[in-house]
Length: 153
Image (cartoon, rainbow, N blue to C red; front, side, top):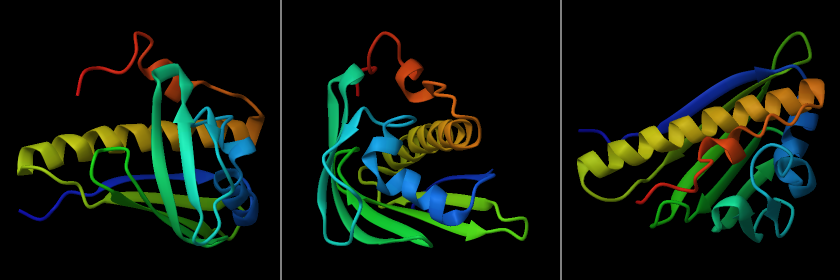
């Protein structure tokens, strides 16, 4: 079995540089994903993202950050995994955002479960980013996903 990869994709009706900035700048990202980030996504940066509503945090190492692509390693699922965002410009001036999370550890069934959970999470993140960037609406999708707190691992 090939290792699973979590994928989510969505068109966001904003220019690529603006969409990139929404993920690079924690003041913007906190409007649709995590509660707070310790710094901007820049190559070589070591960042901490916090989800205060869940008492959860992830350590992030930025490997690449440009208006075309962000790549980082993070520890949200135990052993570090790789996340890559691609910001593809479309002819109408909007952006097609692709996110892929790979490198899950554990048994085959554990890898599949983690990839499915990550796919769901990144779908919420992209939908939240779309609502915020296109309409200025904070949907609270990530915050409201587990109103009783994170389920047991």
